[in-house]
View 1 (spheres, rainbow, N blue to C red):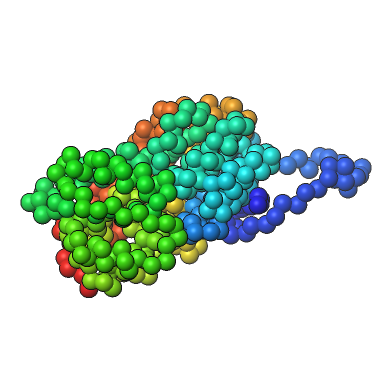
View 2: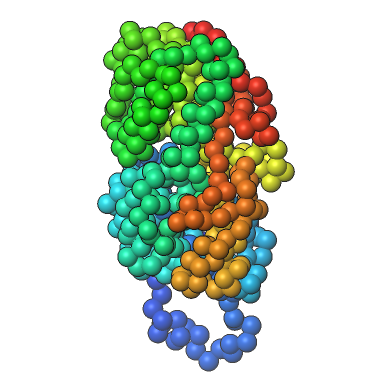
Amino acid sequence: MVEHCRMGPGRMGRVGRRAIVAGGAAVLALGAMPLRGLAQVKTVKLGILHPMTGALSYSGSQGRAGALLAIEEINAAGGIKSMGGAKLDAVLGDAQSKPDVGAAEVDKLADAGVAAVIGGFASGIVLATTQAAARVNLPYIVDVGVADGIVTRGLSNTFRFGPGQSKITTTAIDNLMKLNDGAGKPARTVMIVHEDGAFGAGLAKTMADELPKRGFEILEIIPHPTPNRDFTNIALKIKAANPDLLIPANYYNEYVLLARTLLQQKVQVKAIYSVLGGAASNVKFVTEFNEAAQYIMDCNHWYDPRKPASIAFAKALADRKVDLTYETMLNYSAVKLVADALEHAGTDDRAKLMVALAASTFDGHIMPYGPTKFVDGQNQGAQPVNTQIRGKVIEVIFPKEFASAEPVFPMPPRG
């Protein structure tokens, strides 16, 4: 279902259905009124597409909130100045946590006249939605979906702002080696628990291929569906195998349930080392399940905590009672990226907007990135960071130039 959400200062939460007014009726309503002073500022429609219902609805709602905050700020600051102050008009779509529904929503957004689509979240959804957008030459800016296949299919309409799976896993393994070597190599054995979709299965395969080359032994790889309501048997398997490292790769609800079950079952490991952990970089997890969250590490998307713009972004979310998560960060940044491209294009023509995105050098973002540079749809300036939950804070531990704390490895016993 497609909805319009016109954003003005302080109105991020108001969402309403579009009112469709017949052109002839509108003309009759005007009658013989003079037209001077009735000129309206142009609007640019942006499709904001997320899984707002179904198993991934929490992450979808977070992504939408980040996108709408950016639209609100851009409109409040005068809109797209090269287009005479054109305001951004959010046209909202719900992928319902299903790839085929997401693809159908893209068709609806295209028919609604959007200049570009932002979002998708899950790799499985994004693989379908970017393909659907390519059929109608509609620019698509990927918020999160990390599967490498998203940007290796030659789709000229697809632009992923954040790093992809290969870069994230390579960074995660490199940083794990630094941690383990620096501590005297206490970790040698590994178990991987992953959701069985495109994201989790792809990440597990990469880790299983690469970790043995670095001297680690993979004891077992355990897939699970999404949603999954009970991790007791998986936790008991982990406890029996007694690995040094546990690597979870799953979405928010499953990640939280797994972490809580590990604590309840008194599973002790030297580290819970997430790669794109669904809750490990999420203040809601830290706040609501603090004991289960302690000392968990993650290699994931995150913002640069040193930047004034990042601090202002975090405050704006807090004022709106929205959780600070990577979904909000990436969608906020993706909208800012599109706005910058619109400024350079001077038009919402889709073809010209794609040219502007392909040539983008955008660097006014809150992420710890270099200037944006797209090669085959992948932003070469993007990089992940490593975080660790300490007390009630998500600390950055790698890269060193962005670090807010030193890592604790191995983790102390819990429970």
